[in-house]
Structure formats: structure tokens, C-alpha cells
Length: 227
Length: 260
Image (cartoon, rainbow over all chains, first blue to last red; front, side, top):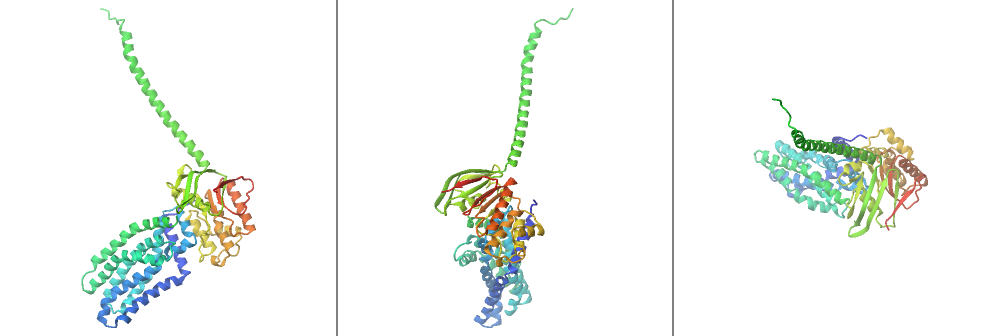
């Protein structure tokens, strides 16, 4: 009997989740389309003054990203919970935190990464400058993983509850406020001609902190949900 | 002058030396006894552990479980040794599934302990989980993946490295020839159950915990499962199960535990 290494385990779970998503592409596409639609509604609603749009752009894109990632959170564990694969994952001879971390990474690759990649296109319709676009992508790259990581705790806690989707948003959105503030703050600073280093460092610190604690907390929450 | 040893000196010497000698002897003896005791207990531990290893054992003492506020059962005690099988009996709602799930470590009992090879399962959960297979009401297979992919993933996660040909053979033995690479959602309930049960063919875990293994299976598959269990018991494995059908295993006496 050969013992699977932690990285082997991570690879296996990530590949499994990505394969599953590829066979059910609609889930990934709905998040992406929601993101594009929400951020496109703002110029329609507030008018086409270029100055106003340029000023609003980082906030709009970030709020849209936040809402889009909330949409997919409830699916992080629920399908595995419903068909029984989640309880089999709890009794595998490996650390559950490691498994949870792999699931979070896979979830981010499916729901966070597409948003990061399409954000520059959305930024263009708000007439953002090249430099601001770059910073926007960097903040999203640092910030969306935090949304997935913190969201995982909410998803695990509301597992198997009726109306869990709304409850997750209520639980997780307040916790995501710092990410939103530092993310939009960084872009705003660049627009004002100041260095965005401080805000980016804070975003990075948030990412590391959540990466350290959240998988363990999520694992405990999953154990409680499956009792 | 002739030097002479005074006659009184010998007894005096003897009296002085004797306690010293006795003390020395005592110390040596004590050291020897302690050493031999250490060696003895070491040997004893080796012998005991080898005995325990040969005789894998599940022991449950005074177990009590509840669902919500309601206590389902209390004072459940049993021991299960290699080569034995135990059927958990009880009417609907008597706590059969709860007992099996508690044995897997999903939930903590209200009272009592579960020992696997002398260790409390909570303290050695990774070792314990490497030694068990649990099949519950849910099949734990993904609809979008094929039977082959499902089997490979679940076996690899359970630390049982298998090749594609092993997995294919197991699926064919379970009567799924020609359907190995179909997405599972195209299979019937019984066929899905067969995919889930194919894990039993490949796993080397000694303790099987099966919750209604025969649900949705036809007669032919039920015979297959009975043969599988018989072979597992012959290999010094252990099985705990619940069923409402009859499960007959030749050559083994089925122990029964009634919860009601």
C-alpha cells in the first residue's frame, strides 16, 4: 500500500474537480456572464460621463466580482455532499485540511481566475488607463483567492441547510469588506498618482492569513455538518 | 620481633567487610533484576503487539448514541476479531446507521469508546481510516465521471494504488462489462451500486462497514457480494453490516447485535 504524498493528493483532487467542471461547463459560464452583465449595467444606469465612469470603475468591477464569487460558493461542497463523496473524503487516511485546501484552489481556478482574466476587458469599457488596468488585475489576483478561502468556511457551515445560498452571502459578505476596501483602494491610489504598494501588501497579508487558518476551520465545519 | 597477626583481627575484618559485600551484592542483584525486568517487559510488549497485529480487533465498550436530543441506544458492547462478521439488527429508526457512522468516526458517541487494535479511534484516526471501508446509503460516485474514473479516484484517495487494468477487471467482475467508460449518470440504480461495491474488490482494508449493501441489487449481484464477503472473511477480514434482505455466507457463523 503506497501512501499518497500531500502534493499528490492535492493534484488528484484539483484534477478531479476541474474534470467535473469541464463536463458541466454551464456552472462556470453563468458566473462569468453574471460578472460581465452586472458591471455592464452600471454605465447604462448612471450615464456615459467618462470622468464619472473612470472614477467608479474599480469599485464597480470589484463589487461585481464579489457578487459573482458569492454565486458559486454554495456549490463548493454541496454536490459532493449530496452524492456522498464528501463523507468518503472525510474518512480517507489523509489530512482533511489539505483536502479542503485543494478543493478551495480548484474552486478559485473555476470561479476566480476567469474573472481576473476578463476584468481588463471590462475595465476598457470604463475607459481605464493601462496602468490602472494592470493594478486592477493584480488586486483581483490577490483578492479573489481570499474570497474563495473565506467563502469556503461559510459554504461548509451552511452545508445541507435549506436556503443556504442566501445565508452564505449574509455570513461571508461582511468578512469580505476588507478585501473590497484594499482592492479598490489600490486602484484608486494609482489613479491619483500614488504608489499602491501599501494596499497590495495588505491584500497579500490577508491572503496569507486566510490561507493559514481557513482550511483548518473549514475542515472542522465540514465535520460538524456531516455529523 | 616476629610480626604476628593478632587473632582478633580476622573476625573484625569480616564484620566490617561483610555488610559492604552484601551491599554490593544487593546492588548488583537489584540492577540485574531491574535489567531483566526491563528486558522481560520489552519482550512481553513485542509478543503482545505481534499477537495484536495478527489478531486485528475492534472493541466497543458501553457505547451510547443519540440523534438530536433523542437517545437511540446505550450500553452497546461487542468485540470483533479477524474472520468474524457482525450483523446489526433493529427496526427502522433504531439507530443502525447511526451506529455504523459512529464506528466510522463521523460522529462522537454520547458515552463509551471504540478501540481499534487497542487504540481509541479518535486518537489514531488516520491509521484507523486506512484500515476501513465504509459504504453508506449514498453511493459516493460522481454522475459526470465514468465508472472507471470513479473507481480510480476513490481507490487512490484511500491510499490503494491501482492500475487501469485492475480497475477494469474489477468492474467486469461486478458485471459492468462494456459500461466501464460510460458516464455514471447513464447507468441504472443497481449498476451504480455495483460501481460503488467494486471498491471492495480492490481494497486491502481489513474492516468493512457496509450499510445496506444489497439495496437495489439483483439476485445475481447479491450472490456476488456474498462470495466477496466470504473471501474477505477467509483472508482474516472483518465485516459489520446491516441489511433487510438475507445475506448468507457459507462457512461462517454470523454474529448478531440487536439494537431494539
